[in-house]
Image 1 (cartoon, helix red, strand yellow):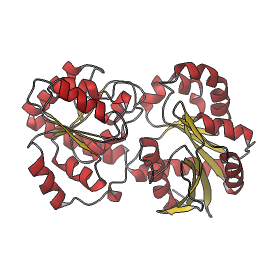
Image 2: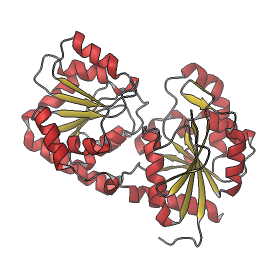
Image 3: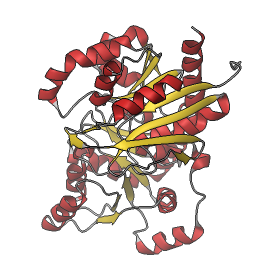
Length: 377
């Protein structure tokens, strides 16, 4: 692949960013920025914060500009000062890269009358705010229509999204990638610590605990069984889940709370299998599931017609079950426990699939081609 001489300046705009927020989109943006730098991309991020830094934050190999978040409604942060900052930063950018859905970005783009080329990564349909979507739809359609390029994160999501289908002529599919080299090295001391603390064989869920993750159903799946489940993560419904487990006498669920990156690697290495029981389309890809694949674990996920079933191929890298079905989740975990050779085969296949389709390097090269083609026009 030939590079264009010189640097292409890309400005990303999203409501949150690493290192202060670690949701799936934030991790994606961080990985993309890090991995495209060597290809000749100069990345800058504009984001919101409750207590914004007064100066640019130099993080890894890119810059982050923060503006004050004045209020937060319907999962959307708003900022009075973002208008002026976006106009200033856009002037110096070659391409503006938006991350959808974030309705405030749509509004600001047109308010600022930005004329620069636009790339939109379409992370998810709007699932929860159905009533507000009716009001937002005209602006959304205008926003997606003006983009030079729209990127879907899996062919599954493109095929199942009514919104993306309307703009399919300008949609490319680039799977989300992970940079395994950027993860902490396996710590023997943390492995020993968790090995002594946790059951010998356990299934792992690790990630932010949100309403669409299907975690109540996962707890129901292990109720009255010997299946051991370890759950790591905060920033959501973890306290309600703990109380639910207590009330239902589910003693084989082990809640770890916040898990550091070092501990996450230890847990991924120790677990028997990785389970992502998300039952709603708000789980558009499942980066946590991809982490399980990268560490050679058999996977369990639900069929929700999103990227989870692109990462996890049923009967190849793991098992894909019906959503909101504790019975099916239980059967899947029991099958893997009763068939250790098959579980090992699934884990091997999962890692090979990660290496073939989901590395940060492959993702970076695909985005570079889009940036380069747009910048050349």
